[in-house]
Image (tube, rainbow, N blue to C red):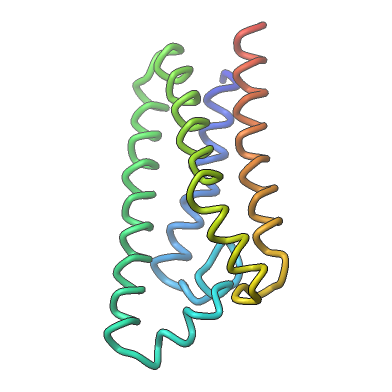
Length: 144
């Protein structure tokens, strides 16, 4: 099994666990659950707001599921070039976290709206780890 397939499989497993968490235990603080946002619990006091939050959480989970399903198809049927460009696409798409989501998380964390405090830094490091692993896998693939 090649290095690109291995890192894609690892990503699929991690993201699949996140999908299950979002669908079945969104209030958890583990696995990037919604429980880290203090407002998630407060949204339950406003049925309209909580319905919107639940809709958006399930939308994210469903979108992740689409990408995971496509990655599984690529793992099963894709050739080396398809996997190569898939990993590049994953890197680019994951990097968008730093463009839109990270500034919001950092601001919420700074203002005390995230529990545990400092979670935005942990999440930023974790996302950088994903990108680093994919980049290293590309280098190993390219030079081997």
